[in-house]
Image (tube, rainbow, N blue to C red; front, side, top):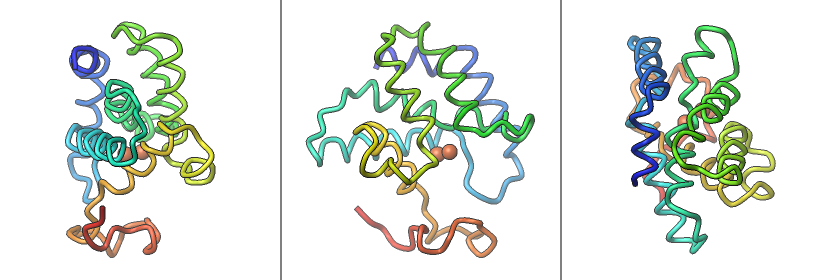
Length: 162
Ligand SMILES: [Fe+2]
Ligand SMILES: [Fe+2]
């Protein structure tokens, strides 16, 4: 987990995490903080084990930790957050001992995490894993803001699923 903690404690990561918190302080819908990132990382790692995908743990955790990290730039500058997050990943990962090949894989997964088409079936294994874990991490069945949520009902997690 050494490289993952390098991401976590990177000044740019910490700044972005704080900004996400500031912008979402009053948000009643899903937030994009460290709890979400770790939910996604752990779910993705469980799926990785269950499906025998054999994806490197650092790749999974890095993609999960970074996939929404640029969310504040969507609020502030209207930059789609998958792009903002991928750009931040490009700045952070080279300073956390990730190879260029690993950076490219993580970037791809981040850029595709909002796009179902091509991710669940034809994207890379990491892309599919991040997409699924991200969606499955949300506990819609227990959400007080569900009625006003823009997620289509068929996408909502209305019970505990594996
Ligand atoms: Fe997202
Ligand atoms: Fe997310």
